[in-house]
Amino acid sequence: MEFRDSNEAWAFWLTYSGQKGFEVRKRYTNKRPTDGKVTSCRFVCANEGHRTQDKRDYLTKCPRAETRTDCQVYMNLKMDRKKENLKVSELVLEHNHTLHLPETLHLMVSQRKISELQAFEIETADDAGIGPKAAHELASRQVGGSLNLSYTLRDHKNYLRTKRQ
Image 1 (cartoon, one colour):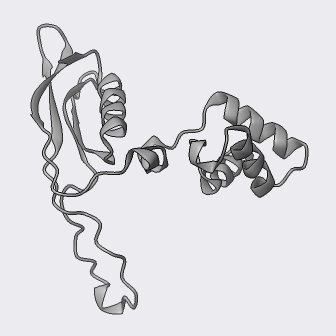
Image 2 (tube, rainbow, N blue to C red):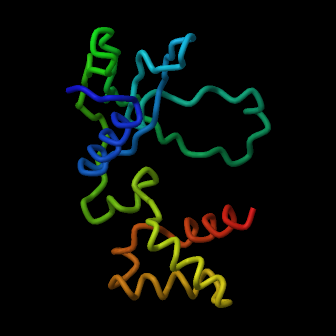
């Protein structure tokens, strides 16, 4: 499989992970120093690896739960120097954890997106003086419930905060 650039590959990896039910993140990206073009990169399951030990660990009263399970799922990309595009060099797809249910795929962090139309509706409701909670409830009723909405109330509030800055 070939991609023109790393953004196209990342879009594919996001779509694939959304269909299968796992979160994703970028592990590393190597770029050429001359023009900044990506020469290799690795996209992984969000459960890959373990968190490092915090040096302030003895002060922690209520530590966060460990969410990573050392999952080995990844996609390595390397540049084909003749064609100047990225090719999949390695692909591992065996998870060691449970995947999200199909009913909850839209609630994964990597899949929660506010479309342009939804952004316009959020801005219009804000300009009309409707609060975020009421506007989110209205949007969820329009699509038949909050399970059918592609973003959460927190995403709604975050969008308004970034728009105001």
